[in-house]
Length: 197
Image 1: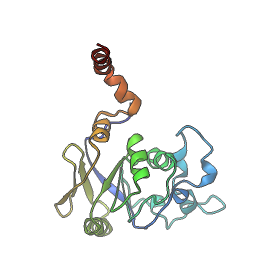
Image 2 (image 1 turned 30 degrees about the horizontal axis):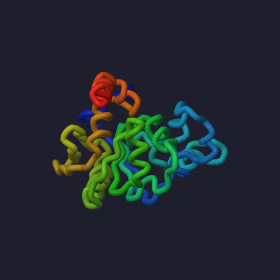
Image 3 (image 1 turned 120 degrees about the vertical axis):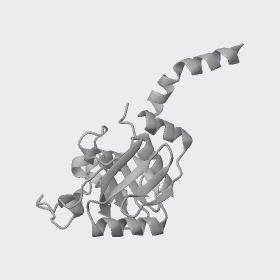
Image 4 (image 1 turned 90 degrees about the vertical axis):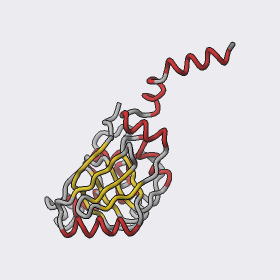
């Protein structure tokens, strides 16, 4: 079971960079592990730290100005993603939602399989969110998964977003694919019993 996502209101961390790929999110040297523990510590590792391991004070995750459960990213976030490691690193750090104007399909699927909600908004709405957060780091977004809406609480503007109905159900109930099958075990067995007749 994963943490359920229903309606989340949170401040956010802005990362207005475009075409961010897996290697920038979690460098390849950290991909040897087969479990997700510890990946959050190395999220954006080469941007957060210099070669000596010192924090880069200019990088957003090292600043106390921005916090929250929502990462707001530039267009084409995770442009190359062949594995679940990027989603593991993002959720391991503490983010539950990532907002952008475009995600690669494989990253969207990997995210939802790991309890991370990717929300696609229009480029105009994304620009408005960045402007609101830059103007006031205390700006919150409200993401309503059941109704598939995201609201910029600073301006009151709302957009709808699309999500696969099955994945939506899994996220709302905190289920992964195996949990979902187990939760529906009786229905599956009843169906198979009827088919055999």
